[in-house]
Image 1 (cartoon, rainbow, N blue to C red):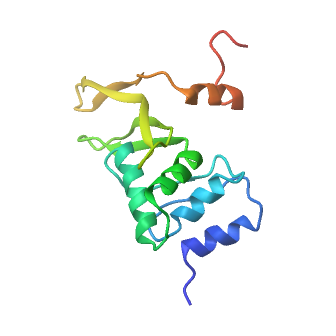
Image 2 (spheres, one colour):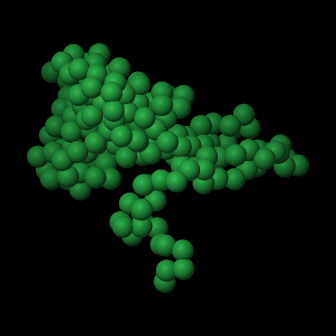
Length: 161
């Protein structure tokens, strides 16, 4: 029979990878991916289509539910909240550019759905003479995410050498 992405995710776990990357989650592999992320495969990532970080979480929950998994919303919310740390939203701007427009961290999963807190946002500031949208990324909220980046060595603390 056909080999699915879900089969590949499950088989990749037997190879003890440091990272797992699934380019587009949409056919039942979402829960397997989350379980891998929660069992020592930090830094793994997947993509899906959604209009906002909050919509991405809702879509992820919907896709897992539609795959036939028998988990209640609270259990599913906890799995997502423990497995995911960040949602990066990329969008195509009206001028054709692709930009990272939002970086949000996952907040504690209490109740029916995990939440998000936007940490960075792309703020449009206008257009240049060629009609290209210009803007800047802004730090918009305190975050536990930044401390994790410092601890992992992905960012240097201000004033550090």
